[in-house]
Amino acid sequence: MHFHHRHPASEAQVTSSTEDNGGQGPDYTTSMRTDRCGDLRSDDVGRQVTLCGWVARRREHGEHLAFVDLRDRSGIIQVVVDGAADLRSEYVLQVTGQVRERPADTANDALSTGAIEVDASEVTILSASEPPPFPLDERTDVDEVLRLRHRYVDLRRPRLQKNLEVRATVNSAVRTAMEEQGFIEVETPMLVASTPEGARDFVVPSRKEPGSFYALPQSPQIFKQLCMIGGVDRYYQIARCLRDEDLRADRQFEFMQLDAEASFVSQDDVLTFITHTVASAAEAVTGERPADFPRMSWHEARERYGSDKPDIRFGMELVELTPVFADTDFRAFQAPCVKGIRVPGGADLSRNRLDDLTETCKGWGAKGLVWMKVEADGLNSPVAKFLTGDEQAALRTTLEAEEGDLLLLVADEHHTTCRILGLLRLELGRPPVTEGGLHFLWVVDFPLFEGLDEAGNPMPAHHPFTMPHEDDLETLEAGDLLSVRSQAYDLVLNGWELGSGSVRIHRREIQQKIFSILGIGADEAQERFGFLLDAFRYGAPPHAGFAFGMDRLIAILAGEENIREVIAYPKTQSGADPLTSAPTPIDDRHLEELGLRVLPRSE
Image (cartoon, rainbow, N blue to C red; front, side, top):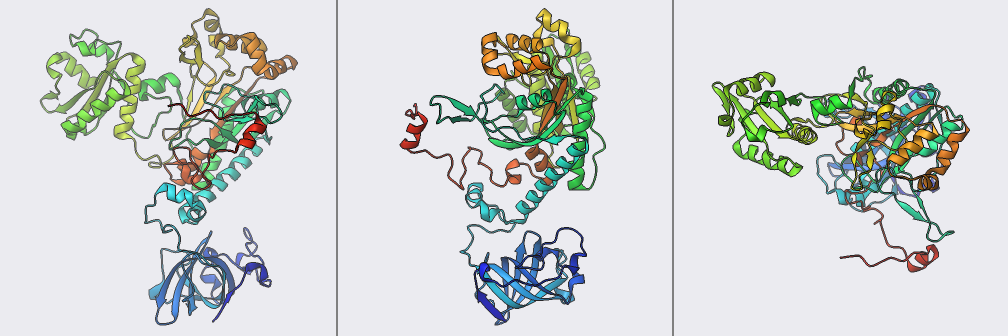
């Protein structure tokens, strides 16, 4: 056995053969290795190979012999080393030796390489390593901040390696699917003017024009519309977008989205394009093509699930009970809307748990929560005595209640009732986001405006470039704004909103009308969006588009609950980057160049 401590740059070229892959797939042969660790199989027995990788584990066998698990991106192979005392965890090695079968009683069925091993004749230590800051096995829970501080080590874990490969697979499948449909990839700017997108911009000060700022794009929305006016016809981009909003499991400051736009198309055309693309991405990862992308109106989703991104993997749908209590004497149910959900077998819930649910609902904004346990001789509930026999019978019939079920009712304004029960439904019944397969859903016919702000101006449900529904243009003119539907649509997967799209306004007079309704005057509209309004004067085609979050789709396909696990270098939930310590202050000289001064933090 020969041991060497050499820098890889000093190594002579390693001669090798590519007979093992038969010309199929990528050739990983380089000047330093013939094969990857995880690619070797029983067919390679007898071959002389050279491998490179990290020491995942070392097990002593007798006085001098050791088994070393050598790891690279492809997997692990067992290497038999004579005299391995110098080899430690995470050392980087180059190993040359012969592939041989393991003795039958030592084979490891858990590894794809478990039937073979490499009998090392030469080992070169390419790089030594200090003990890693945490174990790299999947059995040990590690604090997330520690993992992110040493992300370069964390990325070696099989889970992260697999997730990054899933990400690459999805990116490739998306690009192929879009190009199959005639879309071309166009890059749009990262330094843009600030525009209202529903979240705060990240801003970049201009050194050339002190006091002026660029914004980092929340989306390429306006630029892709300008591509349509420019005759691009079908545009796509896997775009980096940035929004200064609170982080959570499915949200980061910066994220990637598949951004698409097409000319001379309808809503149905866009849904067809995106369905094909998302199904192709899912098939590339899972091997199965999702067959069903049902559609549901926004109104139906709110009525049945209390959400515009409903998780349709389980029941517990909202049931309308207002007619049941139309003439009730029970004051709590004398409300504009009464709805309920049935929890099958939920009568086993303890009183403490029911009290906790009631307080949770109050925290969400409900006046209260009524619970009823369905028993053989009637309804067991603190409020049962206030309901007539007919009301109790109608309640059981309407909710299709059976003995052992739990009934949960909320009475309030319609919007509040739906929202509270929608949240309660998820609290009690939602499975892990990766459980039960992929359940896609198109939600269509969103309202154009979602409500009024403090100044009384309507707020766009999507963005101010969304075309009103053709059948509702007269309603828009009449001023009944909250009744106007838009030509907007969302794609939902297992209760996660993947993305949104719409038919765009392509006529200047309609766009100016929408700006006016939103409280954006002509001068302000020209100042902020003049480049778009002016472009409408030169022949804008009808166009529509869509964008979905790549990180969210990849997380679900990878079996992760948090998008941070499919991003190479994410931020923590507080927005910090433990690896680089960002965000950090900048020095006074730089501030002076930019014409900026940092004010003291307000108490």
